Image (tube, rainbow over all chains, first blue to last red; front, side, top):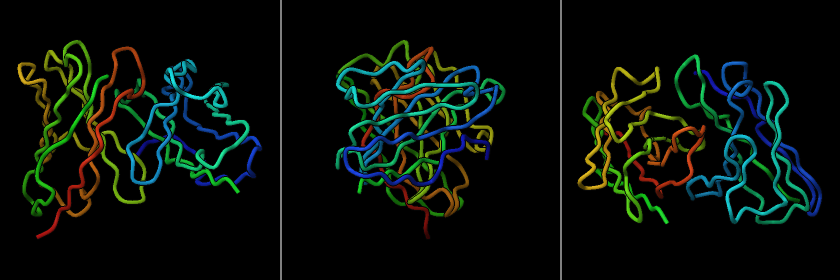
Amino acid sequence: QAGLTQPPSVSKDLRQTATLTCTGNSNNVGNQGAAWLQQHQGHPPKLLFHRNNNRPSGISERFSASRSGNTASLTITGLQPEDEADYYCSTWDTSLSAHLFGGGTSLTVL
Amino acid sequence: QVQLQESGPGLVKPSETLSLTCTVSGGSISNNYWSWIRQPAGKRLEWIGRIYTSGSTDYNPSLKNRVTMSVDTSKNQFSLKLMYVTAADTAVYYCARDPPGDITFDHWGQGTLVTVSS
């Protein structure tokens, strides 16, 4: 199935910075941008960023998002134990007329 | 605060139809897209499709031959039917709000596990 590409796992030390990536193509990330979701084990996903890096209220400023071409990035600074979770990117594909998700990145905070 | 709650059978037999309903509270169902998303254990999220409150739909191309969605604005509910299910359809099913003009989902239900087994 078509989708967005994310690294399966990232490990970083407490208080360090993690940058997670999401790669698509010109039909999705390249022209629609990407959104980011956080999912803790056993819970539904939670929105971190809308398109264009718009952060909903209540989301920590330690989280930031950006995009360059067909790749979107999520950066988390000052990593905390509660940041350990799965992170998914999502977007709309204008060619498929469908929402797409990345495969998710499992973030471990050491 | 908008809240969503999925409901429906947790066990469906192979070849039968999976039916789920999502009830929206804390806000009107009107003027929004509403999506169904599923997640098999240990796997990625998969978008199933969405319905606008006018009744127009978009479905995942890989599932569109088996999916039907409907909306009942008087009850603030929308529904999913997935036909001819197999074990591969076993997953946690989520309903979510899909704001117009956005590319993602800003409110999610808690999810409901549906197992396909005889």
